[in-house]
Image (cartoon, rainbow over all chains, first blue to last red; front, side, top):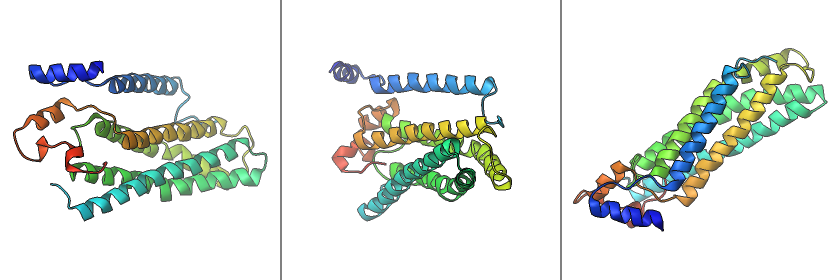
Length: 51
Length: 185
């Protein structure tokens, strides 16, 4: 409801609307997983591990 | 360029088939990874890892590229476009990521398959790689379920580029996909 109001306000102002909440949450999850992936590989548990 | 309705349906069928097929093939890969890691039967373990390499190169990799290409065709050939809606953009990023990581992980898959073909693997042999492949399959399933969910729900949200296109006075860019009846990319 709030984002709809913001979208409407942005349209009225002539500025593009901000990213919706699901995009922001998705980006945060994506960054967290990317950092986890990098950490796992940097600590030597990644692709090259042969047992 | 907008596709004619018949071509659009054909492209959509190809995209849904390849995307869902990819998801199913990763499910099969996951089942083999579980068998390879947990089975006590040495022959079964060998068979699982040899089969994993075949499934990867003959099913998963072709389907991942097919899903990527048909998705690009779908988005560029309909009014959804590629960069106008956040959910289309999110699907593109996730598909590119999944395809890239898949190609990166073909090396440990091949290594494990060759080792399994040469000798019976003890439960401790190459254990880290075996666990990694199981984790990869779970991660791939999560990503592919996310892209499928995005396709079905099509959550709201227009990018700044899409917003500008919508405000253009005339032409295809000013119509929303819902108005023009275009199916999902």
